[in-house]
Amino acid sequence: MSWVIAVVASVIAGFVSALGLGGGGILILYLTLFLDMGQKQAGGINLIFFLPIAAVSIFIHVKNKMIDYKFALKCAPFGIAGAFLGVWVAGMLSPRWVGKAFAVLVLILGIKELFSKTPPKEKDTE
Image 1 (cartoon, rainbow, N blue to C red):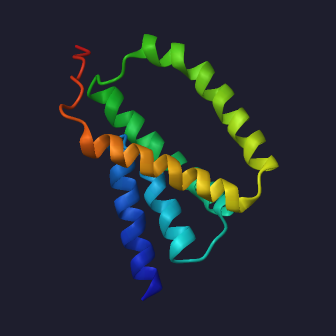
Image 2: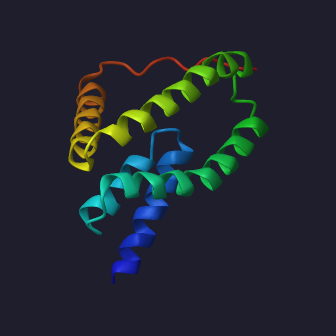
């Protein structure tokens, strides 16, 4: 029965990731809550899970001309720096605090989304 839950959680996480909504959060919640996995280990598994999903999503977004390359290339170096910073900080914190920080982030994003009045306008890239 646990493999069925793993399949369902993976499909949902993949679907949400393809939408660009951070499906890794779903996978991390599944791994930590249902499999009692540590936050750091769940994060590592999430990164491996993310790679093939990102490749498929990028292919489809490129095909549909939905990527603003100039903006993405401006943001990428800062995202890379943020990833290094995040790994460094997570290495210094206990897994308990990493989990709490993740929970606070998910809570803040959820509250923001719940109470936002209008969705941001999509920029037409064509």
